[in-house]
Image (cartoon, rainbow, N blue to C red; front, side):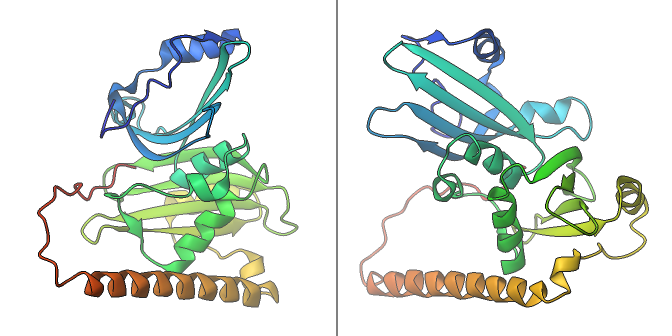
Length: 260
């Protein structure tokens, strides 16, 4: 358990529904996990969906994905449970995996306070596209770097892309600013993508749909995200001003840190 989150999942009175679930729960160790996003169904608590950072991975194979997605389905009539886990390089791909298993997108998209924020509206838009992509992106490879450059990349094949179907999703962190960016690059084939990842001789090539007529659609959607974020910040500011006359009560706040 970490940061006040219970990884027990209330399975004591239930039996594993299959061998895979039994093996998964035997391997499961919550001591190195920090929950980043979670959703539990109500009122009967039949399903749990969690995205967590696994600190133990940093001591394992270099470049291994550190974000763990956990899905628990309980059959309360048969007193059984099914437990699945999957590792991903970034939060958004872990969220997409859980959404494919029935988690409402708007629920798992909420990330707990105390972690770095998207640096810009394009990052918010790209992450949303990943979360809602379903099985569109076949993940071919990924890499996570904790040292300079602090980044992750996920190499995928986009089944819907008619041009440059191999996509690289590059996430770069700025720890000093407490922010990160996510960008999508497009390549004709895997060799071209790996070549760019190795030499970084130029900017990440934008997907063709960013440049053609659909580019206007992309810009419009990013603009709407900017407007929504601006409206949310304005509402928060007004709420703060409305309560500013009341002397604040000291509280302990979470440490701002990037765990991905």
